[in-house]
Every structure is written in C-alpha cells, then in structure tokens.
Amino acid sequence: GAVYRIAEGGMEAVRLVKLSENQTKTLSRIRNAKFQLIATEPEAKLSLSSVKLARRVMLLFGAEREGLSEPLARIAQLRVVIPGSGSV
Image (tube, rainbow, N blue to C red; front, side, top):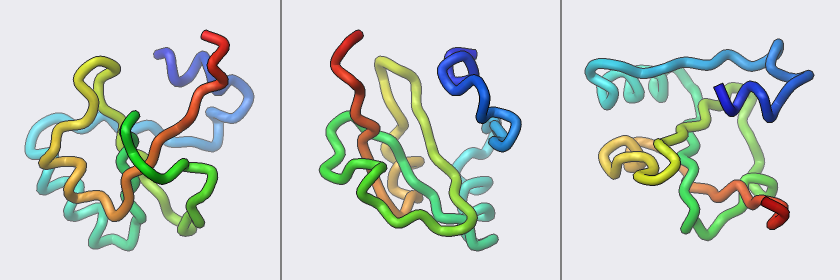
C-alpha cells in the first residue's frame, strides 16, 4: 500500500512480508536465520541512517497510530526512528 507508493522505483528489490499468526515465534525464527531485525519507533534514539545494516535486514513496522507491539519490538536487535522531512 502506502509504503509501496512512497518507494516507487526501488520496490522491485524489496520483499514485503505480512506476519499473521504466531508473530513472535516467526520473528524469532527469522532472527535465528541471521537476519538483523530492526523495529521502527517514532520515539527511538537512533536514526535508521546512523545504523550499520547487516547484509540481511528485516525492518519491522507497526500500525501508524499504535506502532509496533512491545513483544514484537523486544525481539528486534535495534529500535530506530525514520525521520521525516517535516514537510507533510
């Protein structure tokens, strides 16, 4: 949806995954498969642009208003903010 519209031109290289049932177990398995899990949070101290990314990364996004649930955010190795331009 909205993520795709914003990132036109680069989405061909990005795989989107929608987690459904048993999200915590699924993310733990992905992390054990050597993915760097990064949770996005508006209040995070680190900016995504300041982080050295691993070769295999999974960004975790929550709903716009509620954000990512705490149990899912705890699985991530990092919590980052993606700063906006301030123009919206």
